[in-house]
Each structure stands twice: as structure tokens, then as C-alpha cells.
Length: 499
Image (tube, rainbow, N blue to C red; front, side, top):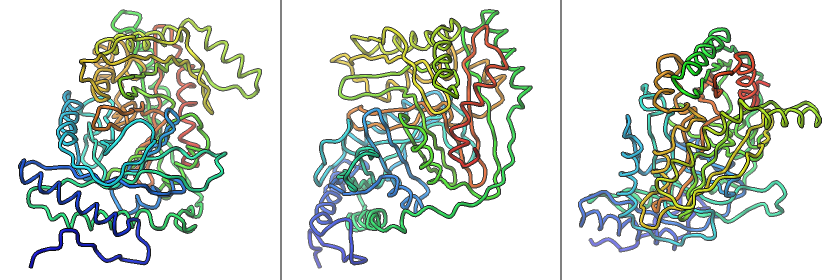
């Protein structure tokens, strides 16, 4: 018996995220992708889109992440965009020195043959169609232990929701976003089964969005915690002295030394509650959370590595730190000291110089702010300088090309890069994993955003590894640098309910 060309699966309940016409369109998209895979003998990405009304992206993510070992949350003030991603249609992995190139090539090949359907929603923040999202560890071979975060892991999500970041002052309780369902089909895939699975995933993630119990926080449990500094405070200060000695000897100009605070709690950490605290206490930062197997990497970062929208490229030099003051007068005095510090300005200028040089390879009209701005966060304030460029008309460069060129900047590893990273590999004694790496997304046209993964933590049930780093130059003081690192740890300590 011949199959009906557009069969409709019965609803599993009384409410569905997709109506019958949507499901018919989704199925037709999957059939076209399967037919294209048969002709090309290659895997083909099917991507279907439609509008979806949601109250809050974090509510959707908080509920939906329970059913999958892979999820992604992104809320950014840089373009007002939000992303929720559940499951994986296709993993894009890389390892070693060529990891970014490997991921970039795999994504370009998959995106080039994509079969799309449904109705795309506009306007949205920059970026369109299916996305590849994820991140890269600080350096190759870091964090590649079994079960931990890989050197490079990006993926095309099975379910993707893009919209705008909710405004606390907004009157509307729901907003229109774009729902996108993705799957990779082979020549022998069953498009009816694939479409049914995607519809079921959409129902699972979206049809309970309006029920209060779906987003209610877990009862707060009193946690008892054991803290361990890696290395110890005394040993880390001694490493600062060693590093500044090498700088004065001319081995390198700057190095960024990190340390870990490992916390073991009496019960698993409440990840959605931590995300809510992060976005409530850190306005102006990009909040992200990445679930991979049993691990969660999350943070609220004030710094982006690179953003590409159309042919415009933006990078941010953020280096130089001072604490916040307890009073407005004290805060202003600390700001004046930050701006006037020759040591801090030198550290900052090294970063900006590198960004300008790196963008100049693929861009014209490279410009930077004439003077650093002061970026104020809850616990610290930084010097920041925006660097901008325009991709040359004949250049194929996209956001992943700039990730490869820029990462790690002197604000993350040091300068010159090779000498600083070599010293860190032999002395820091720390697996940074994705701390001081990058997290973000790319579309098929090369647009995208990647954040610098600082103010972050790696969670594994009741265990959390929190990280902080300090940029060192020749006259850096160990006591002052240690105090700065403590201030940088406070946002994540607060988010995890320990301050």
C-alpha cells in the first residue's frame, strides 16, 4: 500500500506545539531532505521553522533540559537575543591545534546543503536559519578527559528557539519567537519517524510553558560546602612572583594566571536557580549555560571575543580590573585609580593592539575607541575598548575564522601568545577546561557571537569548579592579584548560593 504523501500523526494529548498544517510542512521538509540525501549520498540537514509564543526562554530551558543530556541557554545584551537549544541533530567536534578549522569545515558543508521549510520569523537579532552552537576549551587538549567537556564541541540542536531577552519593564507576558526543528537525514532515513520525533520533542518542551508548576523553583535546601583552593593561596602567590620575574627578564610581556576554587556541597547544585541568580545580579552580562552529559558549564560574562553581523565585525578588549566601592565616593575613587594606573593601561593596551592587528588581516576600516571605557559590574569594574572592522568584500571570513584568529587573546593567556602559553602549560598546573575558552553560536552564513567564558563554573552534581584569572605584567603585586581573583569569584559563589 502506498503511503499518503503527507500523513499526520495523532496528537499524544489535547495540546500540541504544532498544528496539523505545521506537522505536514515539517514532514514535507524531512521528505525533501531524505530525497536530497539519496541523490547526493551525503547526510542532509532538514530545518523547519515557525513562530512560537513563549513567556520566558529560561522557563522553557529549565523544564526541557531535564529530558536531554545536551542543552544550551544564551541571553545576551549585546544584541538583545536569546537562544534555547535542546538535544542534538548533529555533533561537530574537533581536537588539537586544528579544532576550530575542523568544526568550521563540517558546519559549512552541512549548512550548504540544508533543506529548509516552514516560515522563518522576523525580525530577530542577527543570525538566521539553523545554528551551530557550543564552544572551545581554553587550549587544545584541555578538558578532554572522558566525560568532561571536549576541546571543541559545537552542535546543531534538534530544537532551537530564538527570540529577544525579556525586559523586566516589559508589559507583555508572552513574546513571539522562532521555533526551529532540525534533523540530519541519510539516504535510508524514515522521514515520517523523524518528523514524528521532532513533533514529540516540541510538545515535550513547549506545551507546558503556561503552567506555574512547570517553572516553580525547587525548595531551597541548606547546603554545607567544603572549599579547596587549587593551588593554595600561598602557592598561587608564589607563581605570580615567578611569572613577574620572567616578564622582567623579557621572556614575555604579559601572562594571565588562573586558579580554581573547588567546592563540594552536601547536595547537587540547583542549576536553574543559579542561572536565575546570575541574570538577576549581573545586568549587562551574557548569561550562558551548556549541559553536556552530566556536566554543566555556566556563567555570566561581560566580555565577547567576537561578533559578526553581516560584514561588520566587533571585538572587545576587556583587561584591567578594580573592585567596586562600598559607597559612591569610594567607587569613584577606585574608578579614577583604575583609569590612571600605568600598569593597568599597559596590560589593557597589549590586548587592544593584538585585536586591531588580528582584525586587520581580513577587515578594512579597523577602528577602536579613542580611550578605554569603564565597565561596572556587581563586584568589579574593568577597562574596556571596542574594536570594529568591516570584512573585505572578497573575503570568505566568518565568525569561526575570527575565533581561530583571536583566541586566546592576551586578556586570556598572555602576550606574545606562544611564549605565555608555553609558560602556563609548564607552571599553572590547572585544567581550565572551557574556562577562558569561548562559548557561542554561528549561523550558516558566517554570522554569530562568541563570548569569553569567564565568571564561570563547571558543575558536576554536588561538585563545582570555579575559576578566576589575573593578567600579570612586570610590576604586578601578588597580594593585590590574589584579592582581585577573589573578587572575580564572587559572582559565581553568589549564583551557587554560597554568598
